Amino acid sequence: AMKYEENVTLSNGVVMPRLGLGTFKANGDEVTQAVQWAMEAGYKHIDTASIYKNEAEIAEALKAAGGREKVFITTKVSPYE
Image 1 (cartoon, rainbow, N blue to C red):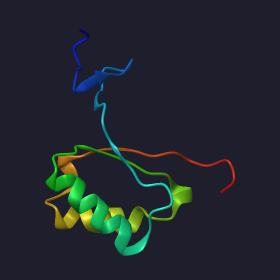
Image 2 (image 1 turned 90 degrees about the vertical axis):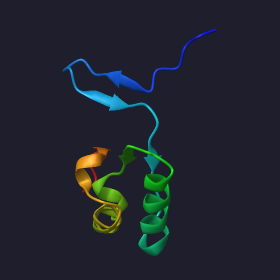
Image 3 (image 1 turned 180 degrees about the vertical axis):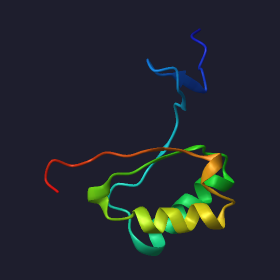
Image 4 (image 1 turned 90 degrees about the horizontal axis):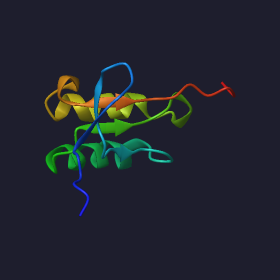
């Protein structure tokens, strides 16, 4: 049986949690609550993008959950912005 590794080491040496909460199409209270619940459940990775327009809500939720330092955040820059 294959062993599941909780993290993956990227080519630049940065260690990233494999499991993350995706936030596409989640806005307002929905994304704030989802991030808070994910943090309570032990998630250490949040995925977002500037085009999702939910970064402020994610920041608010992370602050309420104890801070950004505990979380790996992936984001993308859209060519359409």
